[in-house]
Image (cartoon, helix red, strand yellow):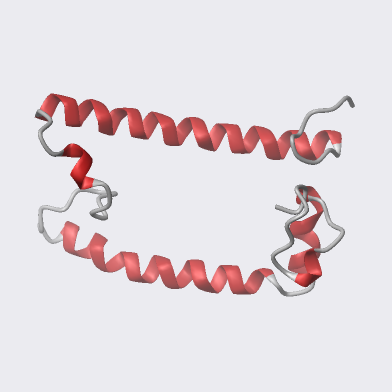
Length: 115
């Protein structure tokens, strides 16, 4: 992240996390991110297409971490999936809160400060 001093692209030097987005969009850097995210989405469509055709694959199941589910009952697996969804939602809310606080108070990481 820019706020911690790690700069992934030379055009990001001297920017905060709140100002980096607009500056990098203006310089055309964010197009690469859009391209690679688009490629990932197109490739993932193959799995979604198979699922919709009745392959038995569940939504969001990319085959990672299935070893942790071995030896667990169906009820335990159902609870773990529920907890994972809740954890993801909480993480999205936390990210939104960090971004909002960064923009409103013009502070960098760790996003604490006074207005």
